Image (cartoon, rainbow, N blue to C red; front, side):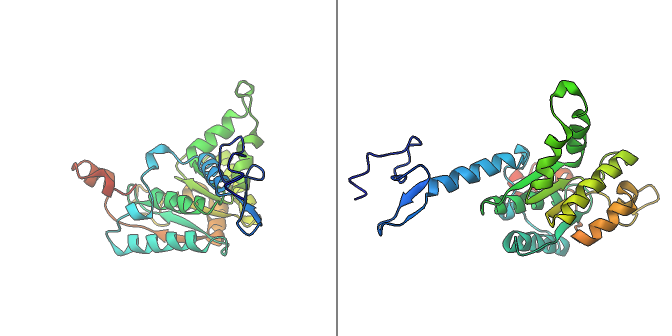
Length: 248
């Protein structure tokens, strides 16, 4: 039967879609969603996720923990990827620059994308700039066009939380976004270079950067994972060691 209908290909050119686009007839006569649609959906979701190309090589296999805190961080990241959607709490990776916070966050998204779960990556500063730019009529975009994907993403990574100057507008905007996702029970993964304690008198804490209200909400919606270690970008990349063993 299948051989006889091999010439009835869909406009997409998939030889399995012998009934209608996106559907495959099984040998027993039943019809199921064709694998070609799953591949297309995964590709579409990956594009919509907005993961920067600089993180193309970042996944769980390319993260090499060098101390117990990095091993624990990898374990928690894998747990989110494995257990989603049967969880309602995200992660807050905090630590100094270049120790793998973004790497692990992207690895989670890539694992979830393979399960056809809609994800989104945003740098904190880029998101704020897009919201601000939406007020300019010349951009022909609205604030809701920027915020809707952030609200709706099943899993959101918000990278570099606290990186922008903590004005009242910044604090209010981020509190609104995060409260919306919290109330909708959406999983959010954050990274920040700001700790909950000061390493020296010149440091700012995460609470000082994002405000008391937002820091309190983060306690409710995330498990805090503190990562320590040397800066890979400084010590590994500058030493000329193979970039395949770096952590971002």
